[in-house]
Structure formats: C-alpha cells, structure tokens
Length: 395
Image 1: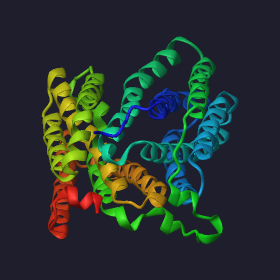
Image 2: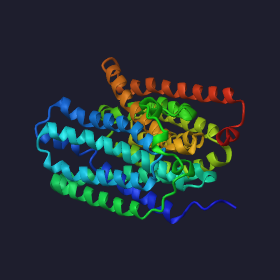
Image 3: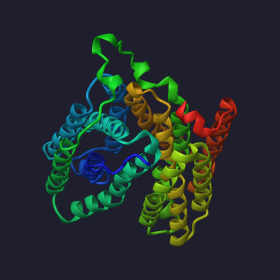
Image 4: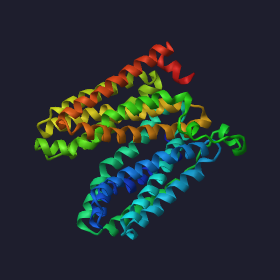
C-alpha cells in the first residue's frame, strides 16, 4: 500500500506556503513603480530586484548549515515572522536608500523562508511519494504566481500603497498561523547532530557535493528561461500582442494539471525520462514564442512552458533531494533555489547585453541553446551512472 501523502501537516504546510508566496508575489510588480514615485532613478529601480536576489543567494548557505542540526519548526516560523515584519516596514521607507536596504533584508528573509519551507516539506512527504508530493507542494507557488501579481496591481491602482501593504501583511500573518499548526518531522540524523560537531564552510553550505549535478542542470535551464521572464513584455510590445497575461495563465494552468502526473512518473521511473520531455517542451515553447504573432500562439507557447519549465523544476528539485543525505537536505534545497536565482538573474544580464545587437525574437532562439546543453548534460549523467534512473535515485 502507498504511504499516506495527504496528512494534516502536509496540507497545512502547503497552504501556509501558499500564503507566504501570495503575500510576497503581490509586491513584485508594485514595488518598482512605488520606489519611482518617491524619487528613485532608473539604476535604483533596477536595484529593487538585484539587491533582493543578492540577499536571497547570500543567506542560503547559512540556512542550509543550520538545517543540518536545528529543528524544522523553529526555522520555518522565524522565516515567516521576519517576512511578515519586513512587509509592514515598506510604507515607512520614504527614503530611497532606506527602501533599498529593506529590500535587501527582504531578500535575506525570502532566501531563509523558501529554503526551510521546501526542506520541511521534503521531511513531511513519504520518500516513496517524494516526486508526487513535491509536485503538489509546488502548486502552492504556482497558484500564487497566477493570483497574487494581478491582485497586487489591482490594489495598487485602486487604493493606496499602504493599503496594499496591509493586505499583504494580513496574508503574511495568516501564513504564520498556519505554519505554526504544522506537526513537523525533523530527521533523526539532524536531531542527533550537535552544532559543536559541525564546522561551517560557506562553500560547503553553498554546494552539496552529492547532488550538485541536477542543481547545475537547473541553473542551465534557468539561463534559457531567464530571457523569457526578462523580455516577454517588451516582445509583446514589439509584436503588438496585448494579452501577455495569457502566457502566464496557460503556463500555470497546464503546470497545475501536469505536475501530479509528472510527480508520479518520477516516483515510479525516476527523473531522467521526464526531464528529457520537460526540456524538449521548453525548447519547442521558446521557438514557438519567438514566432508568435497572435495571442493564440502566445498562449500555446505558455502551455508548452507549463509542461516544460513548469514541470521541470519540481522534478529537478525532487531529484536533487532524493540523492542527498537527510541531514544535508537543507544545504541541497538552498543550492537548488540559488541555482534558479542565479540562472534567471545572469540570463537577464547576458541577454540584456545581446539585446543591443539583435531583435527580441532572436534572443529567445539564442537562449534555446542552453536547453540543448541541458539535454546533453542529462544524457552524460545517464552514461556516467550506467544504471537505470530509479536505481540511481534510491541508491
């Protein structure tokens, strides 16, 4: 019989994580226009994203190290409370420099929370259903991506920024309450580990040697995807496509439907076959997007990205964590999320430079080369191990 997945703790953790992401995603499209309204320059507006990403990447090795010896509940609640507290501070920051400092601290808190929440989920999910469970857990992120940015923009347009922060803070408070009700499972290997027996190394807590390879593949795929997240709005303006939201909606809907299926595939057959399918779907989606002239083509590309990139991330995360020792899963989870942040962030810089010399549609085609590299890396892993994918992830 299958081990039970839908426990009270898993449901509460998943819904609590949904409210964490809802509270956060509401602010993504609204902070740049707000900081502009208080006198920020173009460079300072760009720093809203850059400082946040830097903070998230910098903190994760420290959190990963703490997850080697600390109980999950304390770390999850600390992250949620800090996110809630920082959100309240935004309306008080009418000075640009202060605002940017708060944004950097917000990045630190976000790096903390995403790392510990994902690790806590892995510990709650039965190992035999890890792929399926992480696929469902990832839906809390996906649903937030669908609802929260549009809600944030709506509130920003019809009311004050302070009222927007109040709504975001209420969602953050709900997340704290829900996460406090979860019965967490801390692995025995972590419980039995004493802080004094560990030696902190920033590099050692940044990279987990046992599972760096799928995280590296994640980094390469995100280098390809970053061109889309950076330039799709500009692309729509160039092509006269005015319904860009269709790309994101179809992406999220298809990913929501497909993730339980891909998760079960992972549990039964391992990651390799599904990773090939996901990367190939993303590759086709990039090329279809580059030729898009209508809203229908844009939506179709979004659907392919839902099957591809939207399903690849939970599979890659499950693969990463399934080959990591229990006491090092926090480090591996931090490494995985840092691979995403660095991949998308560097992609924006790389293709921002290339954009000076070519059209946006060509950027998407050039970025597809990273997906070919990801396929080659996956094939190299299969040849190296010379065992079936399922044998590899449980060995």
